[in-house]
Amino acid sequence: MHEQAVTKWIRINYAWVLISSCLIFFTTRTSFNLPLVIMAIIGLVIIIRKREKIRQHSKAYRIIWLLFLCLWIPILLSLPDAVNFARSSGITARYLLFPLAGVFILYVMQHEFVRLRITQAILLILALFSFDGLVQYFWGYNLLGYPPMGGSRLTGFFSPKPLLGTILAIFSPLVFELIRKTRLRYPIVWLLLPLFIVLILLGGGRHAWIMFIMAGAIYGLLMLLLHYSKIQFRTSLLAGAIVIISIATASQIPYVKSRIGKTTGVFSTDFDKFDKSTSYRLSLWVVARNMYFNNPVNGVGPRGYRYAYADNALKSNFWMNRGKNEIGSTHPHLFILEVSSETGIIGLLGYLLFYIILIRYYWQCDKKNKQQMTPWFIIIFIAFFPLNSFMALYGSFWGMVSWWMLAVGIGFSQSPNVKIKKQPQ
Image (cartoon, rainbow, N blue to C red; front, side, top):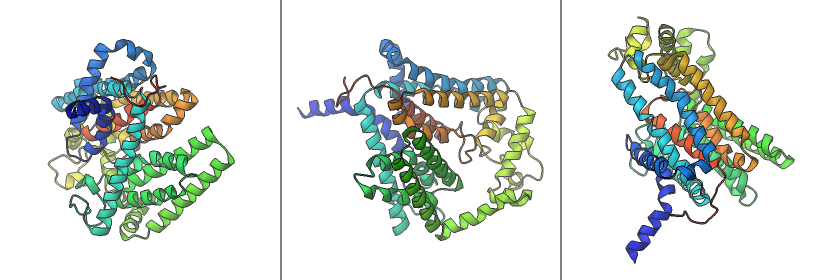
């Protein structure tokens, strides 16, 4: 009987557990590939065996494949001129896992039970990340025994990678939505906002701060457009006041104050000062620009930036003078420059089409589905945003993170065809 109960529980809950577990696997070095491969295999089986059921929600499946092709076709077309064909072809092949995993996610998210559990699980995992960050701040070590990076930057379960602030920032729309839905019944939920802000400031770089501000601004705007009322307007004002007060207070923390001070150089017209204030990323951007002009049609191939760096850098380039074996950086630290230098004008056109299709799809959703998708639409919008400067869009880690977000977000845009309390067999 016990074995039967366990088997039944797995059959009912495996889908939301597998999808939600990705967020935990993001804290690992490479193990996040495991759930991706499993979901892709199941997705392929679904395509073969469940074609009729897929047709019932063909729009969502069609959109995720269209969005995939917008980025994948330029990647494929860049291969003939790739500076490192082996590396670029590997990225091209690996990208095929994303839409296959997306098919699995869309298929199981037709059920309200799965959606509810995914939302609950993700919020609980974010709460665990936040608690671990607080433990690291007050005790000097997190629950796994890791100290802050450099003695001051919180890393939490992501140690030694400084990703805590980035992950909390990009998932902040889910916290905004939780506050909006529960603020009247549980006013204490407002405390989540300053807590999140402090953790993002202490655990994230300037890119995470910008992501959080973007998320808040877009969320507030969409809420006013979709649910405008005097109460909603007052709620937005209150949220804005809490954000301003929290940032002003947290900015007095030495680490945050130091980071803010280093940012002032971005307003300088002097190349060296601006370069230094951006952690010498301007030097990387100049190389990416040169790379694009030298390979304007289809670029140097995905992840080829590092291999073409030396041929496109000036002798005065900061990173070349650091003696990094002719590899200034693995990527240009700006998505739009990564796309342009590695996939050329074809990639830029595909990137633009990606956003046009995404925004159009979201805006054409019916009211109920749009409301469910809104926080995830913001997450997706920011995850692929052209001015992101922290990771590589074509990299294995952020590729997995961003496409997982995309699939889950599109999953919430579907009209559920099964309204039950447990997932059917």
